[in-house]
Length: 493
Image (cartoon, rainbow, N blue to C red; front, side):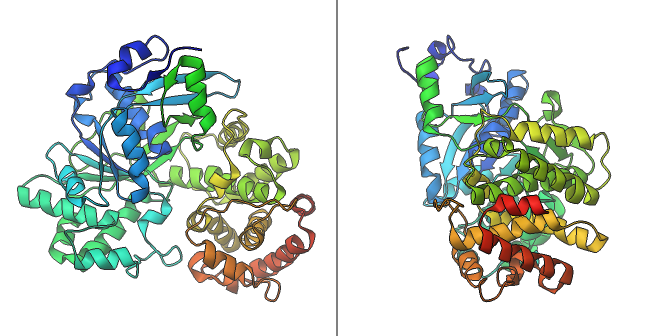
């Protein structure tokens, strides 16, 4: 076994004998990008693209300062501080090939939950040109049924009364924009990198709703001066496991407390709409377009919805990972039927995209045996995801007279999943969802009211009034509860 080398800037020369390291001068980088939500996806995607651009030697203005707004961000803050912002990206190919490299684009990290001024000052710093976000669907604080900002949120109510002590992204953004305006600095761009359709439009609408309630004059300034480009991002990034950490130690003698694993595929399509300059990401494969919406919709309705189809049905059956689902011929058939018969017909026109090839690539990516993406991760926060990925497809097909049977079974399985929390063998399912209690309460009434679960208007909108859907759902949910073998029901569709 190799002698252990701790990942930090002082050890880069020694690490370079084993794993590729940044070749650019990290000391010369300025924090042009302030990124909120430094999870695995950001580090496998935007941070990686930024690293690639810095490797070309012309992106010194675009270093990344990571931001954590929650107490739960303390661990990643501490690890990256200890490692001087460095981490290892482990790319796992379907054929078993593994590529590892140290990424150097993150040069600082600040926490906002106890020291909000540090974050506000960083966002308001003259070097900051972009504030980017991966805060998950739930962080946008809107009602998934109405699309309106949730002013009932206790943190929102608090920061409206205490604007100097923000708690949510909206409080921090308004405080920073206000400070920049007072300092005579141009507005930064707010760039969402989350899996939300029209993500730029959403963060713009929510921020304006919040700012209008807090300071109408500031809201008018934001509306005029701040850009919010929509973007579509894609790279499958499983949760880091101990095995990943052990792999680096046993293979290279490299001690990295929080590496990131991902697939080789990567994509970023973004609207060229920035307030205060941007990196030349097109040099490293990012696609800039006038309108990203058709590409967003394609990805959300095929990749993200496809993931949820496999994840929820797989959880009920007992498949532990997405690639395990794809080793099951029935799951492969079901996924493709959903994509071909229900998702594809409701997509918009797509320039330069071969949809058949794209769907083929999704199946290959889902089947990657070296990624082993857990169904629990894919199913996490389904209450925030499914209204956008899957329920919207059902609603579109109802309007168009299309098929809804494959997606409806997933909703029925989600009810059982939320109620019983066990697979067909009686093993407990790990459920991660901010609405878990509410979902469980609604689902638990299914025995006496088969439609109880879909009466949650915030999730399902007016689907309860759609007889075609309610009839099919009622039939399928009763079958799931009676049979509990999801594969038998899948075969019958």
